[in-house]
Image (tube, rainbow, N blue to C red):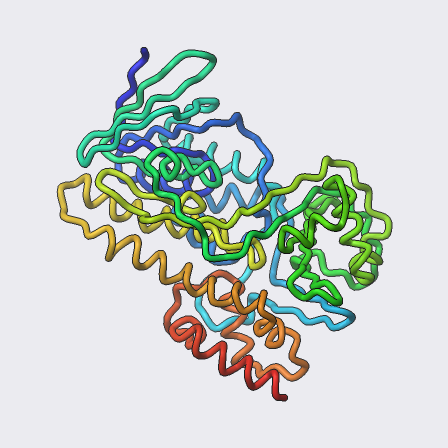
Length: 409
């Protein structure tokens, strides 16, 4: 069996794995990234948030991303039964970038991985982890590739495997999410949108006219293509049709304004579905390992927070790990898990309030106070760790008060 030695073993080559590996090789550490699939490969989570740009810049990848020709994004638009509103992310409370991109993840993730590889991380594609031995000082991952086994030995393991959730599965870390089981049905289309005034620089979130817990995303890409999906509770979505394409077409037809926008769209890509995607774990950390991004917890796609959380986790973990590998004592709970969870919990407040209707009441309120809108815009732009923002620092209390005011007004 082949043996490979590195300082850090990263499971998964998606955004969190690529960012973490780049940040660590910049500090002089030898990093091996073990990825089950061949890149490029399809993934959803295509509408980045501006907060991501800070992590991309810190990883030394900003020029490559800016020059890749992805669709520019400056905000989010919302539509419900004829009511429309929009948030411009350049008009936000928090400091930091106010624009970003909408990306086909196959090309975007490959670009980040290639940039990390250029910086010195070693990538092993088509290697599937089949067993793990995690110890505080030395761990061993056994992977299979083309019928052969390879042993990867390292001083620490970062699990960036996303929905693959390698360590949660193999170390029995999974626990049920407290979110209801929802289903997402989605595809890419040639959108052929000729609608005057349609803003390709924003993701469009559409709420079902009658069932407000059903919503749709429309993410325009460069070149006239778009990502299209619908999300709802499992039984509701399943009742729309037999096949994924029947479900998606029926769902779009039930939202007249979205149907009009996509009247000339060509469904030229197989429609996919994911069920029960929300996930949680007993712990994000343990002796010799940490979980990044979706490998730890995934909430919901409604505010496109997944990639932002993944990149934030990579930033926090790489800083802690660099210090630990240099012999310093690191409190992973206080310096990684707790700060990461603080931002995740802020997103969770707004996701929960979206589905129970309170946050929708805020978003669609016809008389929005400009300063409060700037604070909400910051959260939608990904700045869920900016505790100078009252709607971050006291998310549940502030949002409840605001939703109560909007419901009465």
